[in-house]
Length: 545
Ligand SMILES: Cc1cc2nc3c(=O)[nH]c(=O)nc-3n(C[C@H](O)[C@H](O)[C@H](O)COP(=O)(O)OP(=O)(O)OC[C@H]3O[C@@H](n4cnc5c(N)ncnc54)[C@H](O)[C@@H]3O)c2cc1C
Image (cartoon, rainbow, N blue to C red; front, top):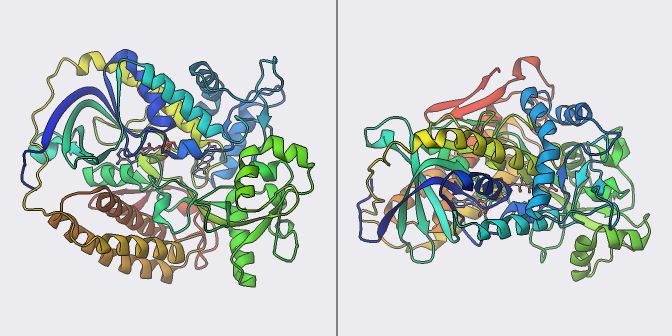
């Protein structure tokens, strides 16, 4: 444990929320009537994967659609690992969740100016039109509406540039196995605040930055998973990382995603010589589930040794393309690509973490006092593969469920005083003197994850990756204990933990299922139709439900 210095302080609250995406902000808004909420977020509040979502939120709203169809589509995508109880509650609670968002202020696209009904988009894997969207900037609009409401609430304190370092577990100080808050780094002055809370909610999003190519924003470094794992909570299904098939291939465009909705509206994937290759890979051709599409692109790229493929929507009228995809159209134009007249160069990239911190029907983790919602949680909705536009939905549904449950227990929780815990210790740690160690390990880690633990895996590659990450992790740990914490160092430490969890979970699953595809075990086996669970000190293993 590092020694205390004078640059620390302690604050208390009812609810501590880490993360300001759809899950964290929705939770805060739902919980504010039941106590004081602090939301900490490691950059500006809108820097979240939520802001980048283009497609929208899946919900059954069309007369020809049904909960059963939405559930079937989700389960078909999930490779036999969806928890059907969770699927059922999510699809049933989706329409209310979407209407709540609209009431909070999200301006979704409507069928016509005065019609009350939402304009519903269609995406790969969905058998009906059910994607509620705001043009092609759905996430930006949702984040705007939620943030406006959060900023207007007197019961919510939003702390930007504050990064959760570690959860406070009372067992470390001789108390019960209980989370009591988090140590939080104020990035602007380097001070560490001890925030004690009656309920701590992880809503820290995904971990796309563990891979070299990702559609995710820079904040997606798996902090929630790493913190929960270090604190002793159970983590599940980390081998299932979804790769989005189509990110713009343009070095100057940082992680710009070309939405799946394009293929929903008729865009076709082509090799560089113009061949439409998807019909050879799946009966649904360009509307196949995204893991099939990502693998097909990976195959076509490796087969012909090219760096990208093409996505072609020139078959649709230019006016339609400009009106339906104004943001993608404008972004492509910035790089000299007019998508109404020429195909868009695209590559696959790490996109969505299906695994995460195990949480139950109310968002509770296996560590008392700790809750996990949104992408950082593993609720059982997605199983081995996520259906497009089910993740914003999951964030909304579980934010509400967690807030409802906590509202009912908060009066009782409030009867006990906050525990007394030591402040953050810095010991003899010195300011970081060799930033190159951080930047080098960061690059090496992400590249090896991309090359050895990416879309197509093998036993040998996983073994190689495990050896190298273990070395990197040791170096990072040593550096961590000798130096004062900075965001870069904390993020590096977290992606190393997440990488180890992904590798160990993938090595344990000696079959191919959903997003986990290995050339050494290509069959899907009944004996593996179980979740992978891992916990500090316990290697990943399968567990039935
Ligand atoms: C380009 C793109 C397009 C997508 N399109 C869709 C779509 O159309 N439909 C759909 O359903 N899903 C989509 N997704 C997925 C979806 O956006 C995410 O799964 C969802 O937004 C996750 O929400 P969240 O609240 O869990 O996390 P996020 O929105 O990622 O928010 C996480 C928050 O946690 C903060 N944070 C992280 N670590 C810490 C820490 N240690 N301390 C403090 N704060 C921290 C971050 O700064 C951020 O504010 C898309 C994702 C991307 C990247």
